[in-house]
Image (tube, rainbow, N blue to C red; front, side):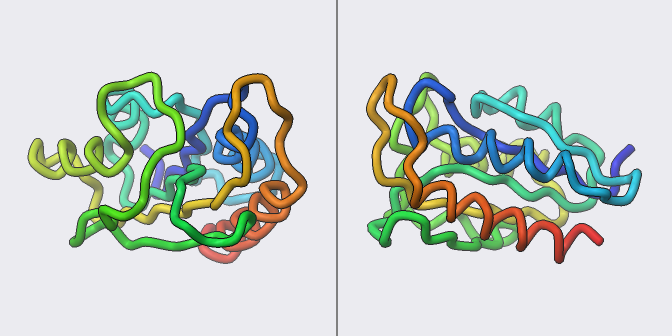
Length: 151
């Protein structure tokens, strides 16, 4: 069982939507304690719940549309409160958004004690586009925040 789980969410084929996945890959390269697990996910609610099962603390990293300048990283503690409704997932292959998936987990009593979402504001989510330079800066900021929390 991991004390802490970091999950990067995204789709590599949709430009800045890959930010969560790429951030998780950078976190996996860090020398973190052995009880910190790092995973990647496409955002499927059932697989997310399986990835964080048994963890004390979970950090989710995802590209979300928050109306902020691209590259901005927003932090939300969703342990007690839902993800703000003004946030949106720019592209999802699933019927539920990240916020809806988290609320489903809350109803099913499968939400960890500590749950944080790091939302990276992207610039472009078009199919086949590369990651933007601004999203790369957001990834670096998110990884830095995770490094502080995970040690």
